[in-house]
Length: 399
Image (cartoon, rainbow, N blue to C red):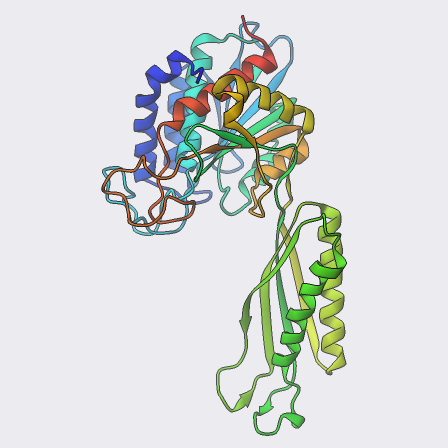
C-alpha cells in the first residue's frame, strides 16, 4: 500500500476521535455533539466551517494553494449518525447509550474524512477548493436530501462528489466499486384491503380480505418473473400481513406492507403501476376495495462511468490493482444517491475485514453491518484517508 506517511502518523489521534463518538452515538438529526467535535477539529486545522447545513450537517471549506482562484471544486462526503439498536460489545469505547449504537460504521466514515482533511489542510498541494461534507441522518434516508434542499450544491458549488462506505467480509484495505448502478432504490408500500367482517362459520355473508390479500401477494411475484426483463434486477418483498384477532371472526380489513428495490426509475415506475392495478382488480373481483400507498424513499445509487474509471486508477495506485474489484450491485439503499443525482461522482466500498480486528470484549455475533457486535476497523482510517487525499490530488492537481 502507498499510504501517506503524515496520515499514518496521525491515525491514532483520529482513532481516539472515533472511539469517542462511538461511545456517544447520536441518531438522525440529533448529531449535535458529533458535529460540534468535528467542527472544532476542522477549525483547529484552519478549515472554514459552515454549521447547521441540512439541520445538523456541516461543510468544511478548504482552498488550495491558489486560494481557490481557479474555481474548480470537489466534495468529499461522510455520514455521522448512529442506529437505534443496542450494542453487545464490552470494549472500552462501547456505546454508553442503551438503545443507540454506531452499528454501521459512520463513526469510521467520519474519521476517515477527518484524517484526509487534516492532511490536506497541512499540505494544500492542490489548486481549487475541497468541500468536506459531514452529513446527518443517512440511516433514515433524509440527511443528504436535507443538505441539498438547504443549498449544498448552490452555496458550495462543486463539479463532482465522492462517498465511501465500509463493507465487512473481504480483506481489510481492499476496495470495490462499479460504474453505473451500485445500490438500489428503496421504496415502501402499504395496501389496506377493505372487506366485510362476519362470522367465520358463515363466510358467504362476509367479504374475506385474507384470501384476497393472499392472491395479491402471489400475483405481485409474477410482476418480477414475467413483467421485468430478466437482465433488469428488481425485488418485491411483502414483509408484513396484518389482519384479525379472533379464530371465529372474519376480519373487515387486511394490511400488506413491504418494500420494492430496483436499479432504474423506469423499472420502479412500471412495478408501482402494475402493483396498484393488480391489487385494485383482484380486490374488485371479490367486491372489496383497496387503499394503495406507495413511496420511493431513495433513488438508486448510480456511479458516473468516467469518474469511476478515475477512482479505479487512484485506488489501484494506492492498494494495488489486485485489491480493487468490481462490486456486484446490492439491493441495499444509500441516500448518497441524492447527491449523485445532482453531481457526477462515485460511491465505493472499503472492506472492513472479517472481524478479526475486534478485541476479546467484542460481542459474540458476526462483525456485520447493523449487528450488535459490529465495530469499525481502525486500520482503515489511514487507508480511506489516503484514498480521499490522492483523489483530491488527481482531480485538482498536485506538485
